[in-house]
View 1: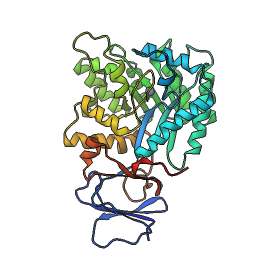
View 2: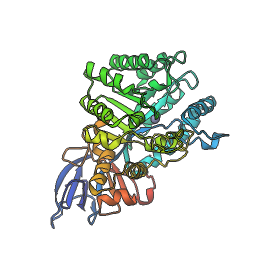
View 3: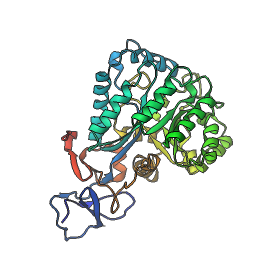
View 4: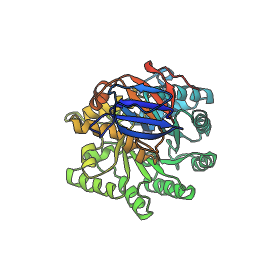
Length: 409
Ligand SMILES: [Zn+2]
């Protein structure tokens, strides 16, 4: 007897309808749909609708989401965005960070996000306030969403006194990943070296904001590749943005992409922010300002996408629905064929799970039953229509209803 049975669902990479049974929070049954429905406490008659594993948000900033109401002017470039947010940060309170983070988290959960990696800023301005709040929320929400907390030195490590100590303290408090941002520091190479050393000291994965410009000479990725290979950290390193690679001459970019694949560095494209802030200096032939997604995929790189910011100086847009970002990426990276659409859904699920090191993930026997049911019978329509999520289940337990009303806490 199963706790839960989905009868007649469409799942990715499967030509026929299947039944999915769940017991004790795990998927314990997976079979072609037949007329005989196995016994279950609760049967969902899906009638061919799409069932996906929980969506994954691999790169987002909760602590600086929803700042538009606090701003007295808008940012129009990266430098201004960093500066204005730094100014606003001076008045952040723990409660303010908590409420804005919760708003994003609960929206994400209702969209079907089951795991989320957030970058949390530590520096002399905000201290450990954001880190304390996000570690508290990680514990509070653990039954409905898995949070990975990155310690993120947005203001640089060597530009500010004590940031290095705050990073180390965050890891002792329970941060999961060491973050870095070499383009916002005095010496990018020294910055990268520090981040690798700290990650190795605490045995943690690494996640860099890297080469966020249109300048083809901004290639700190080369140092990150070198260090990843040298220290045998293949699969443990992620990079976000990497937009300058989009301005590098094609053959050189392809060579670099194949080196990224060799080091198994995961690339997270952040199209909402990248499109908004890059390309602004171009008066004609305006660049899209994205990392070369298709070229990276062709060279075998694990490319995924993230929301990054929600309604703040870096990106005055965003809802937290990963499918919004998927559709935007489909449009700007020209990924509109059926195959490419399926790839985008894989990027939001199984490929993101690999980047984040999530185990027991996906619709297969013995995996955790983190599932989302969509009100459509076609995988392609999941992207094209971003349909209603009829239900979201975490470890086999239903946590939202249709119409995105969040029912558990
Ligand atoms: Zn970011």
